[in-house]
Image (cartoon, rainbow, N blue to C red; front, side, top):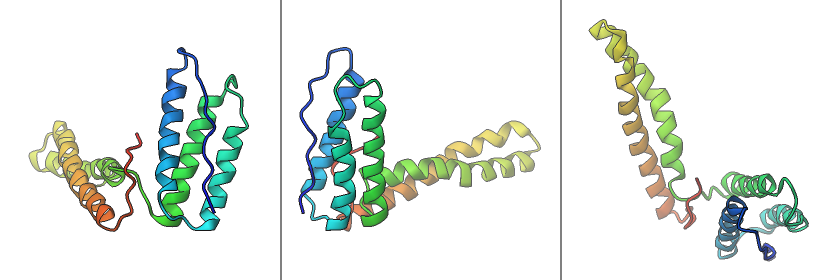
Length: 153
C-alpha cells in the first residue's frame, strides 16, 4: 500500500509560516514514502493526509490543521514503529535532565552551601546530563535505522 502525497499548493507571500509548515510536512511524507511501512500504519496516515488535502488554501485555520496533521503522523510513527526525527531524544532529555537531575542537584547544592541562590546551579548540570543521555539514544536510533533524515522543531 502506498502513502498518499500532499496536493500542491501555492500560498501567498503573507503566509510564509503556512508554506514552511506545509513544506516540512511534505518532506516528512516523502521521507516516510521511502520506508517500508506496514499497511495498517499507512491507512491511518492516509486518513490524515486526505483530510488535509480536502481543505482549501484560504481556509482560516489551515495552519493549525497542517501542524495537527504533522503531529498526528509523528505520533503514529513514534508509537507504532518507534521511528523518530533527528535529535528527538536529545530535545526530550534536555528538558527531562533539567527537571529530573538539575533541580534535585540544585537543592543539594543550596542546602550544602546554606544559600538558596545555588538552586539554579543544578539546571545547567542537569541540562548537560540530559543532552548526553539524549545524544546516546539518538545514536542508538541511527544505528537501528529508526531515525528520519529530518529534524522537527
